[in-house]
Length: 550
Image (cartoon, rainbow, N blue to C red; front, side, top):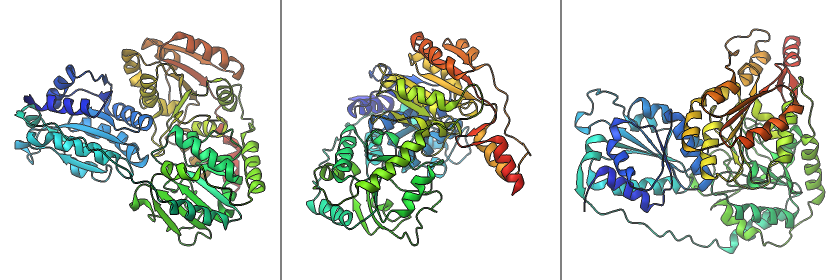
C-alpha cells in the first residue's frame, strides 16, 4: 500500500495505542498533520511548544505510556526543550516528533536549521533523524521502545519534510511481545535478610513504573513489617498519606525531624528512586563517600545503581515487581516504636504554622485536602508556594499528583489541562504562583478550545518568591529582579472565556471554589497573599533580620 510519510507515521501511532497527541502546527510536518486527520487520534493544539511538551509529559506520567508531541523545526523544537528536560529528570516516557528541514539542504544554515543531536543529546535518552521513508516505521517503533525501557525518558525524532511528504510502499512496524522474567525468590530473601539485621530501617520510594497495585503492595509490606516509608521528591501519592507507616516526603523544605531520621537510619531500602540531591539535601543527609548505613537500591536501569551511592546490594528490577513479592513476606523484626515515632513527627509537621495575612496558604491547602474527593488530581510547577502544598496536602490515592521533580516553573497549568482531558470526570486543581502561572497561562485558550476545566489557584504575592527568599538570605534588603507586575488574573480568566474571581481572606475561599467548580469550565481563583509570607516557616522580615544579624 502506497502511503505518504505522514500516513505511515499516524498508522504506527494507531497501532501503538496512542490516544492523544499535543502539538503546535508547523509547515515542516504538514504531511503528519494530514496523517492525523483521519487517524481518530485527537490532536490537542497548544499555544506554545513548551506548554505542548509539558502536556505530553504529564500524559506520560499519568498513563505510563509515551506522551506524544509534535513541534516544528528551529524555535519550535527549542521551545519544547523545557518539556524534554522535565521528562528526562522525572523519568517519564515521551516521544517528541520535530519537523526538520529538507535533508538535501543540511549544513547550509538553512532557515530554522538545527542540529537536533547536538541540541537534545544531553537532554533525551535518544535523538535521531529519519532520512529514509522506508525506515520510518522502524524508527518509530524503536523510539517507543527506548522511551519505555529501563529508566523511561524522552526520545526526539527529527522528520525532514521531504522524507515525510514522500510516498512509499512499506510494512508497518512489528509489535514485540515483551515477556518479563519472574523475579527469583532470592530477591525477597536478600532484602528481608538485610532488613532483619537493622534497628532503624527506612524505605524511600520514587521513580517510574508505579501503579495502584504498587501502592497497595507497598502499604501491605509496610504494614506487615511496621517500618517507616518516606516518599521521594514530588512522589507523595505513591502511598496513602494516612497510612500509619507513611512518615513524609523528602523535598526541598523537608521536615527537619524526617531529615534526622534519614541520618539516623542504619538501613535504607531505595525502591525506584534515584535518591538524588533533593532527597538528600545536597547529599548532606547521606554522604556518598561514607553513607554510614547499609543500602539496597532497586531500580529498573542498571546504570542508575551506583551512579551516586554505591549500594551494598543493587537489584535491577522495577520497584512494583519487587513489592509484589515483598507484600507477602513474613514479619522480620520489631520496628513499631521507631515507625510510630517517625509517624508522630509527620503528624506534628502537618499542624499548620500560621503565616501572616488575611488569606493564609496553609488554610487554603488544608481545606482542599479535607474537602476534595480522594481521586482529585493536584498539579503544580515550581516556587515557594509549592511548599505549602507539599507540607499540608494529604494525598490518598496513586495518580493524584503531577509535579516536576526537575523544578520547572510553568509546569502545573499545562499538566492540569492534560489531566483534565484525560480524566474529565475528576476534579483537577493546579496550585500556582503568580510568576509560575504566567509562564504558560497562554494555554488558557487551549483549555477552552478542547474542553479542559482545571481550577487554577494562583497564589499572588507579586514576586518570584523562591529567588526573593534566597536574595534576602544572601543580600538582605537589596531587592533586584524579583518583583513582578501582575495582571488581574480573574479578569484574564474571563477574557479567555473561563471563570475567574479574587479571594482576599481564607474564609472566602470555600465559596469561591464551589463557584469555580459549578462553572464547568477552566477557572482561576486569585488568592491575594501577604508579601510577608515568604515560606511555611519564616516571614520575609525574619529572614532579612537573621541575615543582617549574621
